[in-house]
Image 1 (spheres, rainbow, N blue to C red):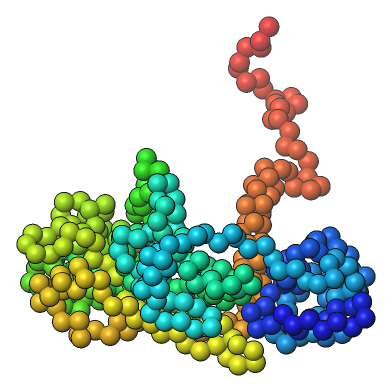
Image 2: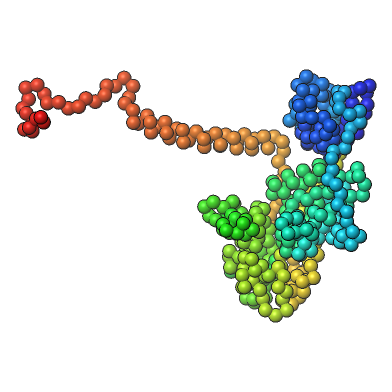
Length: 403
């Protein structure tokens, strides 16, 4: 955000980090002292202008546009409130720094070790989110933020966004499934098919407090996992590549257990059968090996590809050696092509199709009820069918009259 004062009117140049943000969100981020009601009034009366044109609070801004803001609020823009930095020890700062495998203007990529939670929770005080203040060098620098998660016992690539704008951009790519993730896992036994897609809906298992998932064909959320066997040690264990096509909780773990080949060390879903005898570690062998994702656009340029690979943790590497698996046999290439990002027009068309289908589904029950009601009513202009009576002069029915 670059400010150019003109008398009492302020002009701001939209930064690359604020690209594609809503106007009302821009004010909340950059001029939080100006409330939504004021922004709406200014927009309605034409006092806010973008490149000289009137705008609405829901309109989106583009990097490089000039935003005209009328007098009001503080004389100087006030930085949005930031969470108070947590004091970290030298050991914690070193721990955070040691996890870094790549840094870019938009992201910090970590190789998360197994046993470290991504976020805090009940009885969880040590986690990656609590170490992110190690990357804040001054008060004006925004605090990095998580954009996806890994299970506590899963190791590997964890993406951290440096700024709110890059966090929004990365989150969109994860939500649209355009980000490609490849996991390595050691599983018990050898799958019958060398590769395939596991399509099994998942839901929270009742009675577990939401901490365990299970397959639920009727009420579960859609979940798909593509897998490929890279190598196997007879029928004892296999090394597989897993690519989640959806992002459900514990998806890879539940799916592999469901086909009879639980991940080695995953007692939660594999039970006692998930542990191998001998020198193979009892820790879980699931590792986020590679992540390929498009970075946010910088200014007028286009966002580049962020392609990161994380080294195996010691216990995983040792188990690979014990089982005779050669890591050079795989480069963790995604098994699917990248999903191209939709243009604004394609997004509008998709939204129209969605609402059209929703309206169609809403009308169907009403039409069915209308047809049923129509069938039960007499036709317009018709006379109700009279009860049959004996004709005049006709013979009696032979039945005695009721007294």
